[in-house]
Amino acid sequence: MNRTVSPLMIALLAGVAWAGEKPGGGTSVTIYSSAAPGAIPPEMYRPTPGAAYSYAYQYRQPGVVPGFGIVRVDRPITLGGAVSEVKFTDVAALIDPTTVSFTCLTDPGTVVLEQNYQFDLVSNEKLLERFIDREVTATVIRGDHSETITGVLLSSSPGGLILKTRDGLELVNGYSGLSFASLPEGLITRPTLVWKVKSPAPGSQTARVSYETQGMTWWADYNLLYADGKDENSGTLTVGAWVSILNQSGASYGDATLKLVAGEVNRAPRGQNEQFLGMARSSTARDDGGVAGFQEKSFFEYHLYTLGRPSTLPDNSTKQIELFPTAANVPCTKVIVYDGFGGEWWWGGTDPYTDAGPGTPTKKDVDVYVKFRNDAASGMGMPLPAGRIRMSKVDPADGGVEFIGEDVIRHTPKDEDVLVKVGKAFDLVGERVVKNFEVDWDRRTMTETIEVKVRNHKAQPVKVLVQERMYRWTGWKIAEKSHDYTKVDSRRVHFPLALKPGEEGVVTYTVVYSW
Image: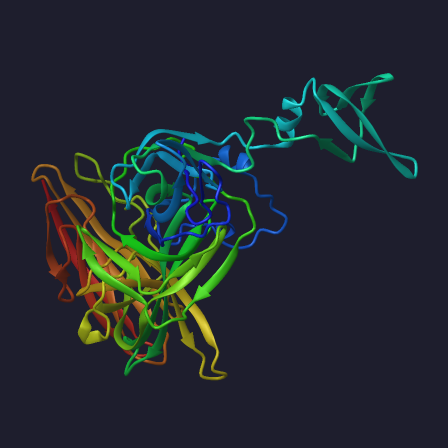
């Protein structure tokens, strides 16, 4: 089972404890994400009142945090002899101990001989189990006062305790508190990484430690403000971009160098419990301070975003940081598409689809998209990590910003188009009808005539793309048509329609399939 080390909460202890010493170096956190944009449920990154935080609870949960982080931390250590014990205490519950790397920066001859990861954390059940046949003190309420009972613990169960006292056996069913002389050996309050270190130079050294932690992820959030253009099919956008970083690794990272990797990094299969669903209270912070924002660069086949200032990532929190400065007046096109057949059904058989009916009801909804170019000429031109796009528009009546739709995008390089599905047009209605269908088995052909109508109930003219799908077979040609069309791919064509206010446009065509 993978576990994750908590970086900045790490206390390095060696030989004689040096609990008062401060860290001697910095911390760097690189976060990788496999989160589908918009797929993180809101309860993962907003406060959950009354939820209890428990490492033991986390261990039992299947993982849902789709990402991981690589932590690098420089720390002073004190070695008491040729072979010393070094403890990283306060580590989080989600370290993968097999990924730990130790390097002594001040003496390359210092090496790790053994590593143990201790995560047998103290709990009520474990504490009572370890104190069987040992003395405990129970506080019980009797009437209007409390009493203490001291005795050897013989049994512990949900029904109560059995204590052996000087006067005999005492059954304690309801107690308000228990007192123990000490913490039993082997139980710890926090997960701990213990190393046996060999060094030719005992004394003060500086170690660099790196490891992988689960329970961390990030994604991009884009806020687009749409403004009308010169006609119904044009407009401009104000584009703001933020990254949201979710930290449920069981550790806090203070003043860390923060890096985010965008791209599909291949990972070997993991077990079910490699990650966890933390049910602790969480907080959300928004960080737009400082002049040094993210710097982007190509890194292998991915893109690396490095924040130019230190940042603190508290445990059980979501932080938002501006990804790039807001881009204003980005030209965009409102693309209105009527796809009467829809994309929900597609014939995938080894023979042509020869039934007269399409196999699925046609629809009347007309879809609305907004498309813009991610290039420098449009005021953009930066690689866009996968994320959720929320689009809004200003209501001129009161200046309020109203939500009009959202979508997700995959990782999008610069100089590519971004297409955002916003919703369905209220004042446009489509209708698709099969007017004629014939099968000639001798000639191995099918002939189908389609009529598509789109009605514009707007007070303004509008351009609509009628999208038709040649779903019956791969071999086809359009024999007759009422409008010119563009062949999009091997199965789709687009008929453009320009509709005046109140006008109904009609597209008819005849397609011949052959096999």
